[in-house]
Structure formats: structure tokens, C-alpha cells
Image (tube, rainbow, N blue to C red):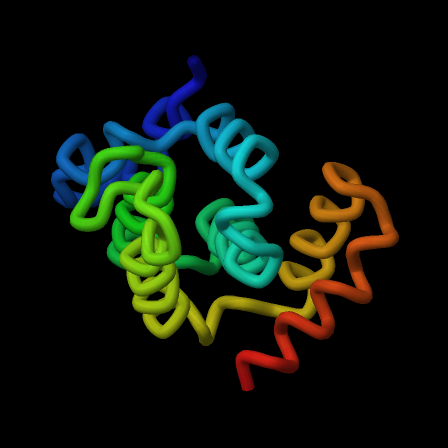
Length: 141
């Protein structure tokens, strides 16, 4: 399993990355997204994908990357404050973690990153889900 720490995101910093990113991998993210889309919801997946692409941006500072990777690692982990398989509320804590990371990363989320996230959703689920995504996002505003 390819772990993000192998990409040297924290090179030249003294951020203790091992504590934050040990649970994150791209493969784990893709597996979680594709396997649990109906439970997670498209809007949360879209937000998680934005974070995934922000963390790859050279403009994103290391401390923001740590927050993002921690949130994405939390999403991937089946064991957290509210277990993911708990009916109705299983992903509310994951949504809170992703939302907190979005607040921290908001100034680094460009239109290009939003487009990458939408394109990945189309690649995984097909373009027919974009209308549902737009409705889900509008309902959250």
C-alpha cells in the first residue's frame, strides 16, 4: 500500500508527520469512497477529494497538509469517535473532521482543485452523478 509519507510532503519541516498520516493512503481513500458512497454521501466525498488534491499542491504549507492528512486518515479509519457502521450517525464525526480541514485549507482550494475533484467523481461514479452532487451541495448551503 502506497502511503503518502513516501512523497516527502514534510521535507524540510519538523512536523511529526508519522503521528498524523500513518492511517492515510491513496488506496485507502479510493477504497473507502467507492465502497461506502451511499453511506458517506457525494457532498462529503467531493470535499474529501478537494482536500486530497490540495495536499498535493505545492502552494499548500506543511502544517495545513498535516491537518488535511489527519482528517483524511480519520475518514479512512473505521474506528473513530463514532464507528462508521453506526446507523444514521456513523459518518457525522468524519464529516466534522473533513469540514474542519476544509476551513483550514480553504484559501488553497482553487477552481482547478474543485475541477479535479469533480472529474474524479465522474471517473469513479460516472458523469450522471454530477447533478446529484450539485443538489447535495446546494442543500448544505
